[in-house]
Image (cartoon, rainbow, N blue to C red; front, side, top):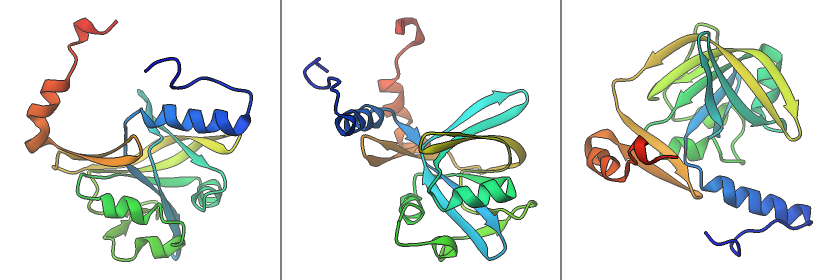
Length: 190
């Protein structure tokens, strides 16, 4: 990328547009965050999930404070993490569809209530129930530290990744050779 491709300007809207372009270059796993209990449930597709620590097990998720999931997480202090597989793009689209609200997003999806009552998507690669240990509000988003309450891991090894504005499917069985070809040996990383 040449310096002419992206440069900072004083215009706030232009800086935001450039920032979004930069962040699209970072591939991220696709996750549905679920929240609520009983009939008052919702969820949203995010790519901003990361591990905070393994000891003790904690994760971070960043969500927009205007998202319908945020008030339910804030109220109940619980949320579900559903890591989507390569065959679940339709589910990712469904939970990012602004026209669908609350329980509508779950229609046609297999899900169960976890031990805490939070909804968990049954066909996910992995599901985690979390208690919101800390919620830090910064600018338009909330950074939520999740304390793991329960985990379930599927036997499937396929993933759905969001990169450069589109979904990319990664399947362990069919893409392993391709992934090995593009892997960079750690000795070459500086």
